[in-house]
Length: 114
Length: 109
Image (cartoon, rainbow over all chains, first blue to last red):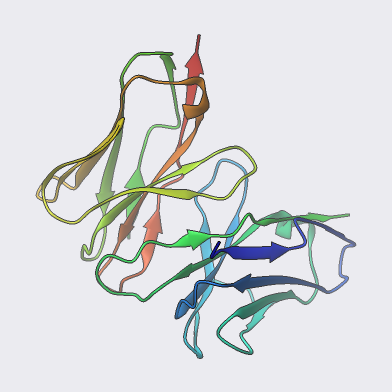
């Protein structure tokens, strides 16, 4: 089945220790998104790529970076995680930005910062 | 600023009907989505409205009034598995999704 895969599902890191979260998709979608979601809050868009065009949300901290080496893969790098970065990180894809284009989500990576 | 409002929590009884409301103020409008999110899991797509009116899909229906900046999700014949958060999201003029914080729906036997 075509899908969005995130690894790992659970990630524990130490305060200030860099961590990388990965996402892959078999849907061949043009657009990939990274969201941060904290408990009982709306998903917060961090970045999105339309093909290789990178779009950084204005309020995404500099501590967060992203890479999309090819259509299928996208990575979220957190350079120096703080306690406030503990959250669920969701990767999503869509065919494009226009018209009816629902976003398909991966299962998420829950990040714990000790 | 852009804003999506939905009730924080609702409770309903198994077998009953529940309506979850969403009001929005966004810069432009290019469609409204409803997603279901079970605890600890990713959101899954439920419905999409871009024109005024009611869209029905099985036990779930979604309504949109663009002039009022208002939508609702109607769930019929509630089942215990419908216990989840329901997120309303609006696509703005830049085709960015603006998300609500979600409504936690609790189903009681």
